[in-house]
Image 1 (tube, rainbow, N blue to C red):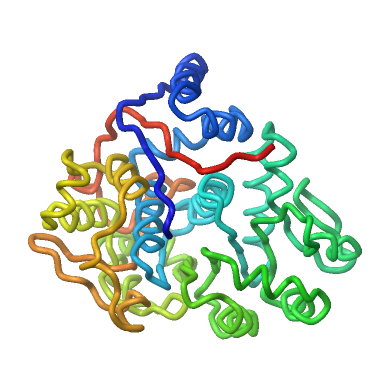
Image 2: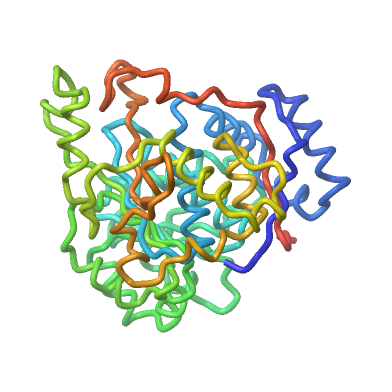
Amino acid sequence: MSHTYNWDLSWTISFDTPGIKEALELLSHSHPGLCHLFRSLGPHFHRSLIHALVAPNGHFPALLNATLWGLRSGHTSLCVQGIFGSGKTYSSSLLLILVTSVLGLRTVLSADPNLPLATAAENISDLLRDAHPAIRSQYARCLAQNIPKTTDIDVLSVDRSSLFQPDSLLRCLLVTQGSILRDATSAHPLFIPFLILCALAINDEAQQGGQSGFTILAALLSRFCLQIFTGDREQTRTGTGGDFLKEELLKRLSHKNIGFLGKPDPLLPHELTSSLCAALSHCPNYKELCPDLPTSPLQLAAALATHPVPDVYFPKTVHDAEGLQAHPIPDTKGILMHLILPHSLRCPARRYARPNPSHLWIPPPPLVSCYYPKCPH
């Protein structure tokens, strides 16, 4: 990822509407193009993004930082596990909007079965409820035959060809890994170039592994594309209640294979932050770029959006790029492209690990985001 995104750490936003307006006013003077873009995303997206960034569980900042690190450093895989209700699909939807509309990168979300796609489409449609039509036109979910529309980003099979025309605004595609994905590669010649240009691909419910869509995506995506595999097999009764929802369940779950990754001991959100912040602080050259070294999730996101990752952390082999081996960092669990989201948003009392104050970071004043080189007209 060659772009540089300026993320001014002096900007703060409160939860109320005047706070957002004040931040946009500051943004209009320093980065007019970015201000126009953020206004185009709509106030509902602004509020949703801020709430996700400062949520006490730290799930979305951890996913955002892991993704920025992966894009910046050239990793090809990121594994994300999470208990039922931990917000994997919602966080992925929010992440897709940031990467697609703010960073300007092409993205794809695939899943089998179709339920996660329907949920993601509802999330994106709701997050962009008051966004500019040019923004909403960047997103589309391909529907199978005889399947009715449920959101404003759904595209019927008879209208599918319009998505892959040279003048199409499409930047983020939601598609199942079944017949639609197989048929599109032959029926629409421009579909393959779209996938090749994707910088981020999210495979939801990746624990289903082995579907034909995995093979098609693996064959068409660029070797520089970061693939995020999200999922959780532990959705039985023993996985949603009882004594197992403590360290023992976390240990059991961390040894399950998700997608193409099977590394044990994934990083909790606070562990990811500690590892990446420590990694940056151990590079003398990085201190010259960023004198105020990040110590919190939002400061880390700002640093990753503004400055490149030091070359020493670039993967040197395919094995490294797939995130199968932790890069050692003193006094941390190291850098591992394997994240686990331990808190359930639907069942707040249920967690992978018992409550521990060290697992919860106290959010600093919320920050506003980054510089985008061009904005929609």
